[in-house]
Image 1 (cartoon, helix red, strand yellow):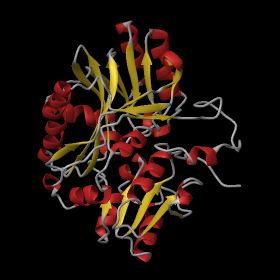
Image 2 (image 1 turned 135 degrees about the horizontal axis):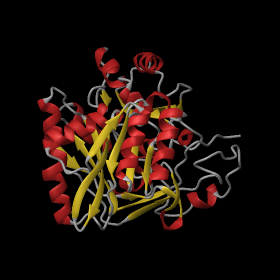
Image 3 (image 1 turned 135 degrees about the vertical axis):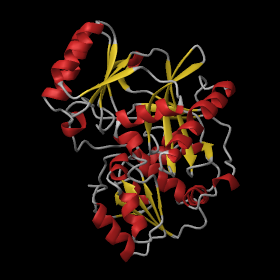
Image 4 (image 1 turned 45 degrees about the vertical axis):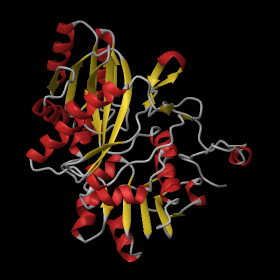
Length: 370
């Protein structure tokens, strides 16, 4: 098989690393890839959002399977475009990807499915939103409706913080059109966990539980990032909770989407907030998490190609997932200043020593060979 992986971060490096272990895989391409990925795949200088360029490349190179890593090309309809010309691709179509592309759409599906989630209001007018959070005068969560690279969510403990978040999203347009709609939610407290499943639109098969850590500094301090590390399994996801989430959240959402004429095929990822053993859903994503992918795929013993093909062919009920019982942990190393402005082009040393270690892998994001 010839495989194309779309994306160029740590998640995509982990996907390439895992896919390369399949005896069925002959060659892997990655667009755009990075310096670490280049050790296992041929990097192609195409942007992950260049749908037409990627489609032309896949046709030209007779790609047997395309695996889409990031959320943006999914919301732009890469799966629909590829399928229209007979290409096999893993990921949800444009309509299904709205589960991540629009917080409001996801909330409406959750309501239809009876999924436990925070009460919310949506706003397009800045003054109305200001008046609402001022009236609430308490902790709220402000979210840009659209995609904001994991940085459009503001947990606000005070009204001043909420007003500042609204200013940044709706007036300063920090996230451009992603902030046209804003969701103001009740502030949920508890412990977060990531619940990631494979689904073919009918059958739902869970991957190992995991937990990532968003704030940049220790003790959950500092601004949110794309994730500073993750481990699997997440002890907070007990067997009882796992069963509850499958029964009350994942299966009902997949069923509700199908009732709306949307067959969701790919990865469905629920962000959980757990308090006293009771889960509430913070949001849904439509792809593997980063950095959760790294520890999850480290534990996966099954052939990832077989699992992805079962999703595409709508025969997920035929497969079982084999896992390594050992826990895994991913630690993210980022340049100082992240997630704000930070220096680029800093050298990374010690990769040879790390490569000599057993049960250890360095995955790359945003690196280049010089």
